[in-house]
Amino acid sequence: MPLSTTPPAIPAQLSQNARTVLAKRYLVKDAAGKPTETPEDMFWRVATVVAEADRRYGASDAQVQALAEEFYALMTQRRFVPNSPTLMNAGRPLGQLSACFVLPVDDALSNGQNGIYDTLRSMALIHQSGGGTGFSFSRLRQKGSMVRSTTGVASGPVSFMKLYDASTDAVKQGGTRRGANMGILRVDHPDVLEFITCKEDLTQVTNFNISVAVTEKFMQALQAGTSYDLVEPSSGRVVAQLDARTVWDKMVLGAWRTGEPGVFFIDEANRYNPVPHLGAYEATNPCGEQPLLPYDVCNLGSVNVGWYVTDGVVDWDAMARDIRTSTHFLDNIIDVNKYPLPEIDALSKRIRRIGLGVMGFADLLVRMGIPYDTPEGVEMGRRVMEFLDVEGKKESERLANERGPFPEWARSIWGPDETCARDASGARIRPMQLLRNCNVTTVAPTGTISIIAGCSSGLEPLFAVAFMRNQAGVMMPDVNEDFVAVAQREGWYSDALMERIAKTGSVKQSEIPERWQRVFVTANEITPEWHVRMQAAFQQHCDSAISKTTNFAHTATVDDVRAIYELAYELNCKGVTVYRDGSRDNQVLSTGATE
Ligand code: ADP
Image (tube, rainbow, N blue to C red):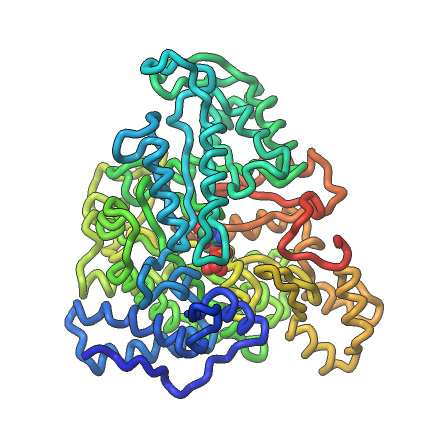
């Protein structure tokens, strides 16, 4: 018997900001745009759809009901929130629940499957359903090369990326937001220089983040101070050479100017590709945390780790229980998801990729009294991520024993296959483990779901202690409640102080004790090195990549950015993205200081 559509009589614990975002973007609305469901209805809609999947594995009515109630409690108490498409689409006609996709782009206008215009169509369908798309344009022939059928010349990857960009503008998701894309080009593609500078003009290609896929070979040439080969995609022929330092400097300069291009260390990502027999990673999702195969998909969800701290102590047992329930939740999504393309549906069921991550990490540190930019802070990051990874995998293993491992398991890096991925010394890249999912962990930006959960986003430090946030066109005040609580408890709270903090964007105020100035350190006060060290610490225990922005002060130099790009490589990050304060006009988050 299907579950009742009436939610449990337990209200969701939501802030006013969370309610505003939900009403604007997530709740089901009537023709006049008025919500026809409450946040509780929404969470119950999601909980029931996802719990129903257990029925396929023999769960009784009572068991499905109990699981739905558990999922409901998890979300309404803000301990875990799935990615936006799950909240928006579960139990609704589209039924598409995932945030991240990668589509292949073949070097043909149309071949009935994945030519440029075929994939353009697939992109529109994914955007319409609320997903974000990543593409590698590396297979497209370079600008100026011959097109045999028309005896014309090809216009190159950048021009087609602009076409995808224009199409993205036209398709609004659920009438509220536009799609997001990642455009990737290999560093050895002949058009790489055009690609690196294609977003110099900030009004261009605005619906894409761009990253250069940088190879080991390139990094070796950079370190040796030599040139490297540019390879024609259609023939594999070397058509030119470029000086590695010159190209690297152009990337770094772009990142300093506008934050783009980012870098995707493609060989490092492929080292951990769980299913190398099915293909190689070429691209990531829009925010970079998920390298994906062509036609691959990932549904994300994040545990609000700050929630588990009471009086400075982490309740690891409670966190472990929730990590397990959240993993179960994400695995169920694969069974109830309505994928926009048959290729995606097929691959998702063969590898069952999920992306469980964290949010509220900065809150966790604050509540433990540990400054983010310290060895203790970084060690805590490593530990939290290891815990998430180990507990998530225990649940994935339990599910594999009960429901079967993902069908490609035997030939994956988790299986017994002796030929599967090895490191330079011949050792396995991953230990053998029976798993339900080829990939369990990631760290997403949690841009919107962290507002719903009322916590700091992803693994990022606090953005500010008091600031104005532009969310879907609404300016919302955001004040850190932990800060207010400490200030009131210790007797140095005043409205004037909060206003000064909001205006200057800094907690370096004379009435704030030194210790709290350190603990409430904000993103712009943290040196770029600590940002990258934290990213690398999380990466150590993360299957996928990490969404992280390394913040720079406006005054940072090009050399500062170069040093960080090189440090990220040395520390085995899978990518790096920087943002220099004030280098773009319409920042999503802004403190008074940069307005
Ligand atoms: P949320 O908080 O809404 O769940 P995140 O900020 O964690 O989303 O982003 C997770 C992923 O969702 C991104 O990496 C990207 O793949 C996808 N995504 C984010 N914003 C958009 C958007 N505007 N359109 C399409 N996909 C998006």
